[in-house]
Image (cartoon, rainbow, N blue to C red):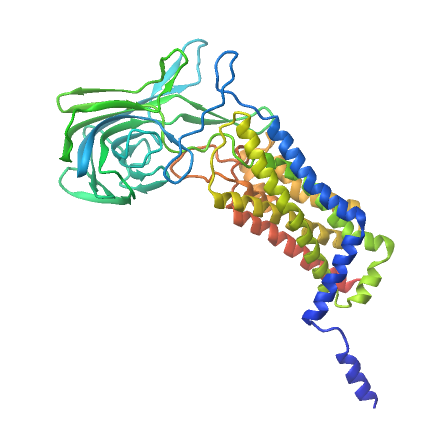
Length: 525
């Protein structure tokens, strides 16, 4: 009889049924919503995120006018993919109707770079090429900035490349160019398909790549071009961070044996695409070209690439740091208050399976935080961007899916921070210590990495190895291998891709929650 009684008692213990876990979830939700201070703090975190974000956007003004009249800064050109682009180069071109192509021999590529002045008042210009200086052949939809194109080019330090529509880059043969070792370049059109080739002797050709430019008009522009982005230098700041500066450069390509195929009627035309015009009508750092017989010399300034500089739409979300601190406080209190008042024993009696009880508490807290943070980040992002534009800022455009990822990703970071803080509260059982620890793990690394405190390399490692890695979900402008830039946290670029950074934060939350479950099982409440 006693054996039967023992067997029955064993099976009456709480099982891992869905109904049992649902009861735990309802209990934790009821517990959370009945404590007014916790609810108010979560709402306050959302409101603070919105109000501080919109306030910072309201104070961010820009003007590109001259003199007393303020003029909103013009938006950057937009490429075929909707991204902001630099489209500034010198173009010697003719119209091409229907199919055809261009073949040239590039015999020389030289340039100039302005360096910091050694003698005050005396310009320090030295010969040389920056790594992504470009000279070559191009077929472009029109001379309008941002229009579709494909180009085969020689670069300053990356060999021959075929690029199209700003974001696409295919490597050809490495090396340089000289009169003793010229480079032959060819670009052909067949309908919407453009194909690039290169050769060392003009006889044996190697295909570099193919680009399909959907919707290309029947008549396009074909010709020679040159351009050169600024010389980027990154120096150590006074406080230990980094300071980036770009100085004027130009590149010159010397071409001969220029051959055109197809219907290319009309004379050669020179256009300085995107040249900056001063208020008095003069051109700032203009390009130039000259022709002597069959030899062309083309000099250009600028770049043909996605632009990574300028105000970004996620800027108002810097207010999330303050909201996160409030979330950390309420998450820690959600568990430490039970220890402080002795209510944890009641909680564990109601749910003897301690791991499931803590998991239910974490799930409720995470969902509540996500639900509060999602509208807050959405409002801050969308309304903040409109305010920035209204204040004259030329905010860089980003695709709709990127906007959604930023909003949802930041809300997910709030939820993960809440779960991590809850786990730390369970491990430490003291509110102040848990709040300080969570803030030191989540907020402080981001502040140190994005201000002028740490060297770039240290800042990048900090955002790889700490829960602050999840802030990578804020980044709206990607890094491009073929665009030289200051890709550092202080400039808004994170070392991990958005979802990878969020995965690091999730890993910390899961690890801390697992350790908290182990401690809860092994120690008395």
